[in-house]
Image (cartoon, rainbow, N blue to C red):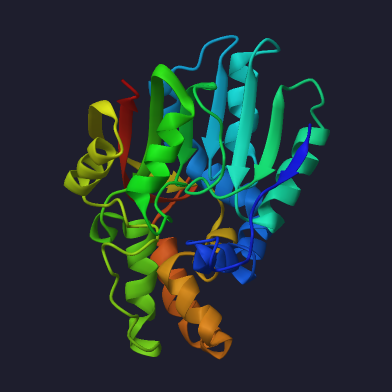
Length: 290
């Protein structure tokens, strides 16, 4: 396992400086703290895209926005000792978790690199495939980022990622926020083109960006399921820390006490024998470098 660093904090060299700062401050620390619960919640969605990618033994893969390394480690298991996986992210707090996880599994062919895929030198024609679990929606210029990623793929190389459908189709984020609205300031409306979790919510935009970046064979299919799995207390802690509601409460933590009971009631409505499970809707996107 090798640590590599490529991210710069010079705004002249880093067009995604706002995202670098965002994921290296409170948000990155929060995701690192709740890594196990977030992995459990997001794992089924990532696995759906991973199964579509179908990584093979001996392949060399890049994992974009690898976060705490959960997907990179799973990809490494699938490509086996003859393969290799490079997990790339801009968040130091999350990459520290990834490094620790990999150190505990020394036989896996995985390394992590702190870098911005939009601007980093990823190499030319070095990867058989690229994968991402919710890591491709945060670029200031997604066409440039995906074109750079595409150049790192070998001719015919595959791309598969999972991204969120519109906010309105994701009650796991929408319902806790709606329950809290009587007690909090109205959130700033989401800019559909700005870097963020819903930047690829419009499937037509995803297709346009991928085409402009040079990809072909583009397929975008919906996948709806329920995610979660923790008990009510665990789900409540997460709902108050991540997503749109978490963003509001980070600005004014004093509001947590006011929204706590209302959000808890919403989560209790979704309690099942397997924990709190709420509807989620994503796109499973695949494409190829010509």
